[in-house]
Image 1 (spheres, helix red, strand yellow):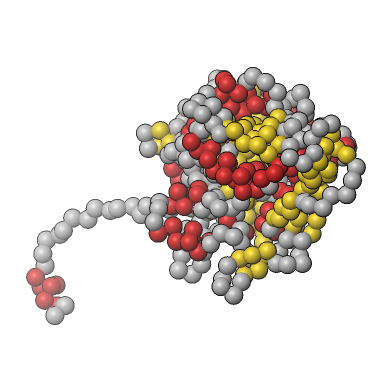
Image 2 (cartoon, one colour):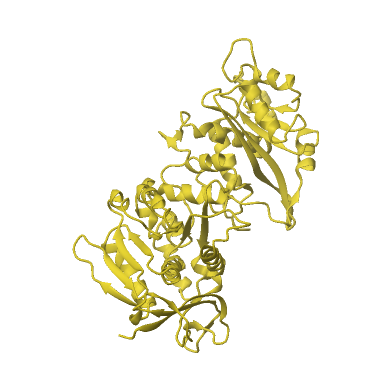
Amino acid sequence: MARRIDLVIVVCIADVETTAGGQPQWKPGTDVEIGRYGGRWDRRSRRWVSGKTTQALIMRFHRGQEEAIRWFVDWFRRYATGDWSGIDRIWSTLCIGGRRSGKTHIACAMMIVFGILVPKSRLWAISPTLETGDELDQNFRDMLPRSWYRRRQAKTGRATTYTFANGTTLHLRSGVKPERLKAGRVDMALLNEAQEIDEAAYTKLRPATADRSGLVMMTANPPDRPAGRWVEEYYNRARAGSIAGKAFVFDPRDNPFANYESLAAMSAEVDEKTYQRDVLGLFPPIGDIVFFAWSPRESVRVPPAGFVDVTPTFTKTHLGRAHDHVVGIDLQQTPHMCAAVFRFYADPAEPDQPIAWVIDEVVVEDADENDLIDGLEDRGYDGTCAVVMDASAWWQDGAHTRGKTSDRAFRARGWYALFKPQKDSDRNPDIVERVKATNARLKSAATAIGPSRRRMFSMPQNERINRAMQVWENRGGAPNRRSDYAHLCDAVSYVVYRFFGRPKVKAPKLEYRGIGKLDRKELFKRW
């Protein structure tokens, strides 16, 4: 065995072309180097040494992976230099998407880069079971040059271990018993198929990476069981910026090495939810969910730069006066008073189709009307906003105190533009009708004249509203009114129904008319 070895990795973004035989391949001459790691390693002194390197492992990634790869390259640079200025430090990442989207390949490659960048580092790659770890094992064997490592085959109940030439160890472990992941130092960890692993595995691993300020990576398909819902929560919170995490979404349509035509054909072979989850990488509802049309990936976003804010003109048309914001409010002292703040936008391609956007949320626990108004005013809103709130506000307050009403509390604070959810009634619209109206805005049904469209969205930072819209469940075939999520969803759906609900149609009065005595003379006159 040679004393010195070249341990060099070059990370490139490259283009892909199709051969004459129809097979994809890397297009020669298109490599763009974005990262270089390692050097010449002395096995005896166990350190990097000077000297010209002649060999390198080239890791190529296609354009559909570029965003994630550039982020990891920047993270490695900052980790090596200790320079985290100008950014919020990230401690964990999630790569999520459909089958064959390339997320696992990226995670394995980044584990190898870290192992070369940081000699004698400790890496853990964790699968739902030891048997399902075969995918990772094969990936590492395919990626690593044979001279770079020694591999010890796993025995029953034990992990397969790779020992790199620079002293880094990579253990392939099982996540069946999360408590076993608590012991020892880990510099970088990977949870593969995280939706199949208990959340406790993640919570055990995160502290283990603190010694070396490392990273926990996760790869996942959207979960199909309640036990995997923690992955959805991580995704939502990372997008909202409420945790020090990063989420990347991968689409198999962007992977030139996957035959998407074959994947798309599954739409006729499996149910719609399975197709959305496994092929498109979407988050269809788990269980019987009230807002089944809600999608964490598609419903949560910021308004595109070209969209036009039409809130003033839209509200003037529907409410008789222009307002810059519309606030939906549900009033319950316990568990919370809550508000959903809306604006309305127009897509230049369809200027006559307003799009509702929840741009902010205010939730005050165990509070009264004044606490909620304080919360709104603290965020810059005032009495110029239009308020659509629970119709019961005109006959009671949030604590159901006799002789007090919520509308008086708002008026006393200068909030006068108060509206009921149903413009032609003093009562709240039927909850089933509110749900129908909201689902229709979230995603209209495809018709012969056009595809389905989404005309309602929410900003990523609305963490509590987005969570409520995603998981509010039906109970006994109807929305669960005892759920804490019901109040936030009410605040949203009151506004939706006020502007987009079906108008109330009064049934015609039925008048009974008896049959009079038959007049034969009159009857024959008609003939």
